[in-house]
Length: 248
Ligand code: FES
Image 1 (cartoon, helix red, strand yellow):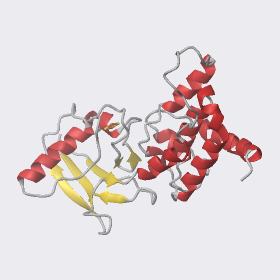
Image 2 (cartoon, protein in one colour; image 1 turned 90 degrees about the vertical axis):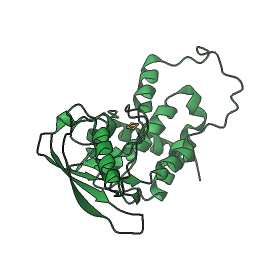
Image 3 (cartoon, helix red, strand yellow; image 1 turned 180 degrees about the horizontal axis):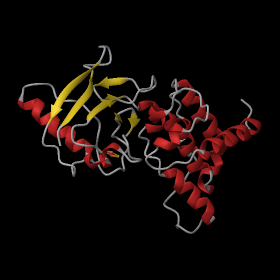
Image 4 (cartoon, protein in one colour; image 1 turned 120 degrees about the vertical axis):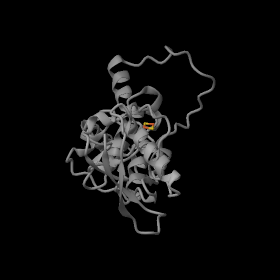
């Protein structure tokens, strides 16, 4: 396949960026999207040009590091992570626009790499339990109803990639935050800090400058792990319940 790539290039957070155009030939349909970018970078290095900076780690759809807006869609045309997207989703002769996540809470560091540490701070705000745990308990000592275990697991699948924020017209992080809140709050191990967790995480989310949710649902459509939209409603209920129980 022969492709025209229009790639966002930006030296650093303080320099304005712009799209740069590259022609790339000999792309196999079996390559992953990131492997295609590897080929581009090899060509740029041979020519003495600066390679394109982009985030990746596991390349198996697990870690959440990869993060590209491809032709206007977070993670591209398939419902998967960028690293699991393959070039068979494109046609010979295509022009592909490649941009970083666009959200003010995710400032660009360089080229296609953004700073997603705002997510870390949201997790830190409420992601721990302070109850003494001692040594690892016997797995069946705390019974968890099957429905609750499934619910927790469904939300634990969030890999924190940020596609929900990138897809949202408001740059909201409600789907991410709700996945973390619901994952922990439904389990008996998470119940001692159920109220403070949701209050603190939502407060941190707001402090980071994420936008407000208007339930457009783009987040759930873009999420490569299928975190459902009802997670947000469930978190709103948790938050309302917590405001009644905890006086601050
Ligand atoms: S590189 Fe780990 S999920 Fe894509």
